[in-house]
Image (cartoon, rainbow, N blue to C red; front, side, top):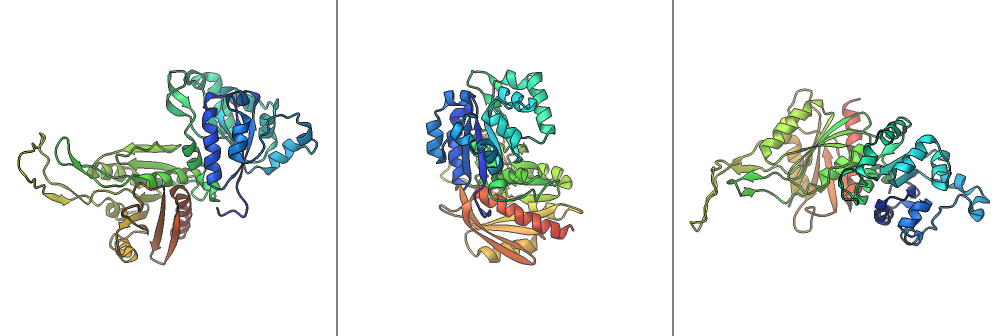
Length: 402
């Protein structure tokens, strides 16, 4: 955490069934270093016991606006001033309507009126309720007033229906807040960022392919953090099992050629390009139409060089500020610097890879290089690392584009 004190969050818990996810959200927020004060509505208390939230937050749960002991000192006003952020998760259709109308019938809605801190809602409701014109009108009104939204997600719901209205998962909410939790400002506000992430698959025949061990987690973490830092983000993703970051436009591809086509289509409109994908260096030259049968003791596959997407983007006339990645098993700085110069990049982010290093891990350490300097980041969670990297990228972008 870069703040002098922990980031302070008031977490509002309402009576949506998704409240069962909220203790995990508290745990994850505290793991990021935040202080969390839970405020529950009466309906929320019927879903999950306040004792659960007290245990995971380490603070007494508040819920009653008429708590004489707390209100002797105007406790709701003190809470409103204490918060750096008010987050309501789950945010039901009812609480959205109350906040939109300016109702202050309970402690949570009173706090939403009394605080000057940013207000974020993570909606959770039946798909028909979410799509109802009244809810959509409240959504538009709240957005116009500066209220932020995380989600909702689309999928299967507790009622058995399928559609928009699911509360996004706690890890997604935390990732969306990564910039605030890491003390990162809106350093990318107004900028368009294009990010590639994950591996590519190069077919050998209709059922086999060659690939690599990239999980895509670093690229997806960068996409999460970039939206939190104010950017408009497009994410070109190879075949990975990761949920799309909130407010990110995702383009799914499989092969290096497909990733090249998608990237070069989007690159002219981007201010910054971050090539975090592990694009295959080589691909099979010939791909038979039918499956290769297992007959001989050996099989020879002739490989040829794949496209160099990073170099092509860097060579574009009036192209984006280009940031590459270098995954090395040895001589990290030497090889990364050579790649920076050879491909004429604005910046390169280098990390060592191997057993229990980087691949499929939740944390990473990197070396950042540019023509005039360098910066090292010790091992930390990829969500926090992404926010810190984007701060450095934003600084170098501003230098290059005064």
